[in-house]
Image 1 (cartoon, rainbow, N blue to C red):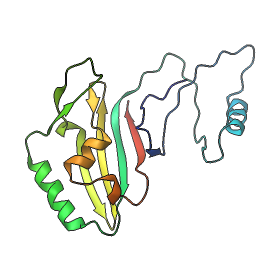
Image 2 (tube, helix red, strand yellow):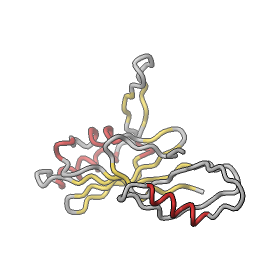
Image 3 (tube, helix red, strand yellow):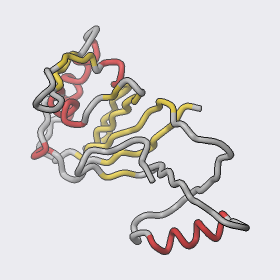
Length: 164
């Protein structure tokens, strides 16, 4: 069992993909399996689609939308100005520290930031993910001058799209 797109601790999610390897004997009814599996999941998790590929499956790069619910004290006009200034840059470099034994490295995360949108007090950020990397939630928050105290709820990942 695996999640091809891991999430940060504390980030809620919709539209997730779960991969299971199922060893079967004899006749296998996919719909029956789906129903049995659904009864074993927590009530707030719903299986919306299930399929059985004929071969090994690999998941290609894609996009996901992260939603940040902002407290009313956040000046969304000022936030939008910061975002616009940021996106005008040719590159957006951040230092990433891996394990304590590894040296920090500098990464350009601009290619992973596809779009920003603010509607009322909801900031939506569309991010790309690739086998080579992605942008981290804490990097987005830091770059636009937010902190977790300015959020009115959990960050949600939605609308995960995989490239074929």
